[in-house]
Length: 378
Image (cartoon, rainbow, N blue to C red):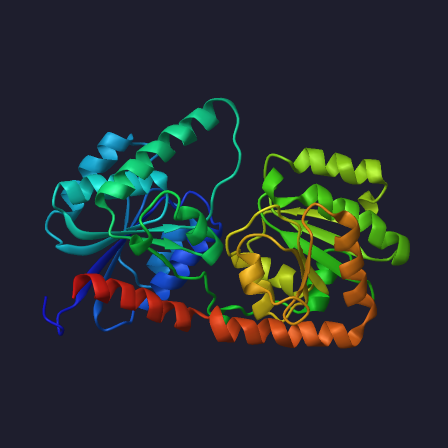
């Protein structure tokens, strides 16, 4: 390929949720859209917010509904859609998509394969666990055999992948945010009024899927301790998931239900983040959480467990406070330090946006992704 010729890149992603992987795919695809040396195509396996956002952003998008088609049918449709497009790089984002991508390369429908590993997954039970194990084994086989590059979203994930794959196939491209897009639509006062929170009340919040790996039981236990010192504090938990009722029951049993708001899934998550005095992450493991980057881009002081890729993002006591995972007392104490020390709060706010601009802006990561594509093709 000549250096003046465009590279055709197709991203293949499920798009069944609007979570970290989907937000990151959309962020990077939007950043690549106007790159003169790239032709972009997205194939999404569900009609939903990701497909809608991609189309709104002017990115050619094909939807193949996995709720109506099995994997064999999806593969046949993909072959038909891609056979005349001369795809240079096919970039996939999860197990199922990785397997489909490998089969497409085997059929000669793309020259190079890239996959992004957005996280190391969560624990499942029963049939779902068996299904994930099977997909994982197939994914590892096809990855070793057909993929040219494996992108980890954190150095921590890249280190763990070295046990499975060749080191020269691995690289890190951090999750990133486009700071210009992190704009609240409503003021703090408007959001607080909707949530029935007085402007003078401290607000501590978190957001994500309500699943065990997020450690929201620790968040609620820490809230109980914080309320002993700051009884007017309010705690927001935005997101939905299988643990919702259990966590609501925990808040009730701790006697803090009047101070905790379970917000469910919110389309206006930037508005919710912006009304916080402290953003908290209580997870037992994380890659590079998009919600963390968004909170930091909004200059929110962050208190987080020192896990996974979070330790790469946050420089302790400079761009956030890090605490031991699973320790509600340490989490509560760190939050109280931020609440009670305005100088610390100000320092962490400045450090948060500085860290985003230095390493986690979309401009920095777009350049790395472009170099990876060009390095393979040229």
